[in-house]
Image 1 (tube, rainbow, N blue to C red):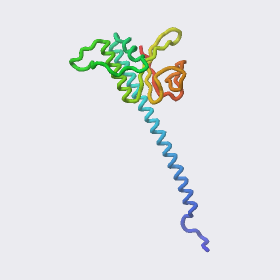
Image 2 (image 1 turned 120 degrees about the vertical axis):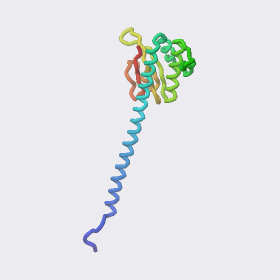
Image 3 (image 1 turned 135 degrees about the horizontal axis):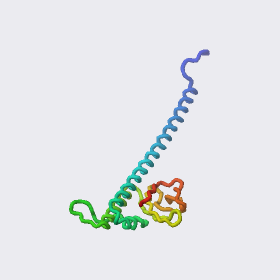
Image 4 (image 1 turned 30 degrees about the vertical axis):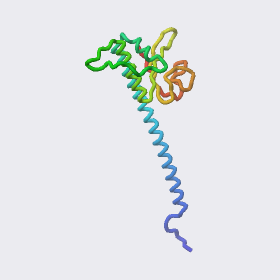
Length: 168
C-alpha cells in the first residue's frame, strides 16, 4: 500500500475543470452582453446623427418648415422625391424639403429605423414638434402601447429604443 500520494487525483482534476467551465460560461455571458450594448450604442449614435442632419436641413430651409412637418407627420413617410442635388438641380424650397425628407426616410429604412414627427401639446396649449427616431420593435409614436417610444405623459416607455428631438 502506498502511503504518500504522488501526482494529482482524479477528483481534483474534475473540480478544476468544473471551475474552469463556469469561468468560461461567465466570460461568454459577459461578451454577449457587451455585443448587445455595442449594438445599442451604434443605433443610438446613428439616430442622433440622423436627427441632427434633419434639424440642420430644416434650419437651412426655414421657409419650407411646414412641408417638412407635413412630410414626416404621416405614419409611413414617403422615401421618394425628385433629386435636388448637383449643378443642374433647380428646386424650389418645397421640392428641397421633399427631397430632404425622402433622403432621411431612405437612410432610416436602410438602417432599420423609423422616422416620424409628432406635434404635441405641452404645458397648456403650446404646440411643439418632436422628431421621433426609433429602431428594432419600437414605433416612433406616443401612446400607451409597450411598443410606443413614449407614454402619453411624454416619458420614455420602459425598454423603448428611440430618441426624441424637439424641432423649432
